[in-house]
Length: 465
Image 1 (spheres, rainbow, N blue to C red):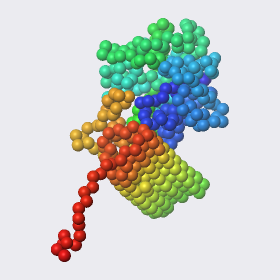
Image 2: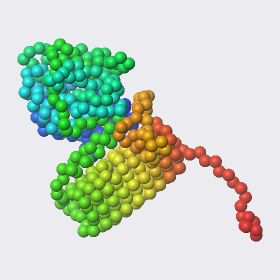
Image 3: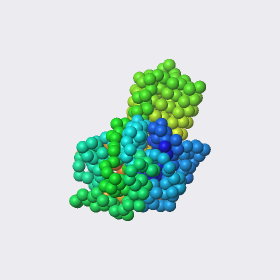
Image 4: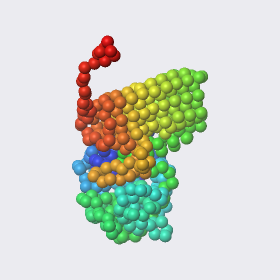
């Protein structure tokens, strides 16, 4: 069975984390999303994988360089997932069963295995994998599946006002079904999305693969489906990265049942650990460290001198965590990061982020972000509400991590900066000392505080001399 991962599009709703990477390259708990997807689909039975897209594909080429299972194809800019799949099939034709996945989704091998088993148990030309029933405050973004009493998909629609619904995680198809037209023959039918309800609008100039399946179901009959029960996160916006990382951290640390120490790894007797520890080569947990959970630690990492990890965490290679810093449970610390003296952090650090001392940060920090001393971010609004974010000009309120601070790659701050809840800062930004960030900052800007100083005479005469 061949797998096709659709990684087309520029991922504009992920800004600023799309500027330097394809969405399939996003690090989820320190491993590229595409690597996790390839491993999951191969465990479910795929023997080769094709990844197709047009945005920053060199990063994916680097990730899978030398991997004989994976072929990375750079397409021209496409108008949607259906056209990306057309390009992938043209470059690497399918002569057998195939499974189609989305490059910006976090999958579980159990769900993909269920899809493969369901597909092989039927003679249908296509089979769908649906998510569990969702409840989402931003439901207008989703394309959802209509099903009949047997659970088979009869059609797709978009911009639902329903509180509970299902979306399609992935689907499988036969290159040459026994009856009817092959699924691939329907790909040219993907045009204006057919399922928008009254009060909604179809997406402009975008050819969704769900549109193809909509026409396929209308002509060939309902599409058999199974409902996934494992992890599934559609990573469409920055807070979905946070959700995927937290979900993965909790799942991977929960799987630990004993301490695992690689060559050269050590734990000081004074350390207090309430869970299990997996330490990579030459990593160590030093004096007076407190870990109130289970942690997975990479190679050549040092956790020392009173550092506190208050729950489960995934920590990368070559990391320094020292000197009475505090890391909240569920956090991901990327490769080469530093969390040092009295720094307090909760969230996700991409590779190379530095938190040196005296700060409180909750959020998602991109590659090589440097936070100056005494910077703080607000997480609680005076009205106790969740912050609204602007995504491609549209306001919405996330259901997860709405009040986190989001900072793009290669940005830095001076000392004593304050971030209001929910602000987003682009890539290549410098925020000067003392700036209070109350609104989003676009990429490639420096923001400085203009201070008015008052100078007056002063001396001993003011004290009566």
